[in-house]
Image (tube, rainbow, N blue to C red; front, top):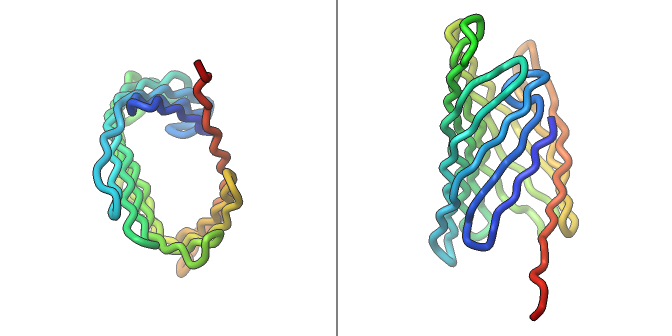
Length: 166
């Protein structure tokens, strides 16, 4: 499930997703990141998005990140409206509460919540990961104490474009 995003120095944000909302679905989101704080940093990115493929629809979403000392909180929420009558609208949230144990090692709690017309699904879990320079590898273990437990392995690469010198 690849996700690519780009943010300008002025906070204009764009995100391209594949297989995120549904299998065989491309999505494009755009918004503006609002930031505050130095010692305690907060970033909120409200977005609008459109999806095409097995799921076709429009979404309202927001990414939120808060960092304070070695603690971090992040949350991605979205409400999507289907253009197809045979697909239902849905609400989705993925949140994390973590702690940077060492400069290259982090761990914490995570959860997913999905609300569909067929019912709601709450999936708590643990997360841990390592990071080196601009690469991080998080591991998520959802539903650890019940049937249906599963693991998600992530690979994140961050690249910063450099301004041309005049």
